[in-house]
Length: 215
Image (cartoon, rainbow, N blue to C red; front, top):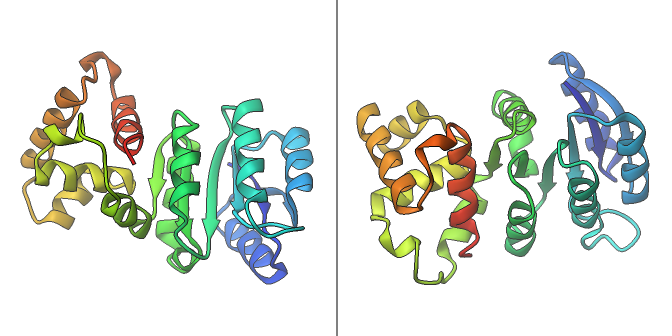
C-alpha cells in the first residue's frame, strides 16, 4: 500500500510515517499543507491519503476541501481524515461525497496501532470507517423520517457498527448477540433500505451512505 500524509504537526507527521513504515506501508510523501497534498497526490497517485481536517494557512477546513478535490479528480484514491475533534458537518460531507474508500478517525485512535492499520487497509479496499464517537454524534442528531424510521433499534445499532467498520463477528461481540442474529439484522437492513441482493459486499457501503444521508 502507498500512502500520502498531510499533517501540519511535524511530530505527528513523522510519527505516522515511522509507524506505517514499520507495518510495511510505503509513505510516498508527507506534507504540511493542502496545496502540497494535492501536488503530491497528483504526482504519486497513492492508494490512500491521510489528511488532517485543519491545515495551514487558516487551520479551518483546508484539509477537508483538499480531500473532496482528491475524490473528484481521483475517485479510486482512499481518504482517511484525522481530526482532534468530532466535526459532524465535515464527517457527513466527506462520506456523502464518496461511494466508499473513506474514513474519519480521531487522532487519539492512532495510539491503537492494530485498529489504525486495519482501518487504513479497509479504506484502501473501498470500505467506510468512522470513529465510534463520530457515529455516536451522528446518531444523536435529529434525523428525517423515512428509511431510518423502518429500522428497529437493534438494526440501527448494527448499522452504526457497520459504519464504524466492524465485521459481522466484531458486531456480534460488541452487541453480545449471535453471529446468525447479526446476519439476519443485516439482511433486514438491506431490505428496508432497498438495496438489491446483487450488490454483494458493496451493499455494506451503500447502507452506511444511505444512513448518513439522513443526518
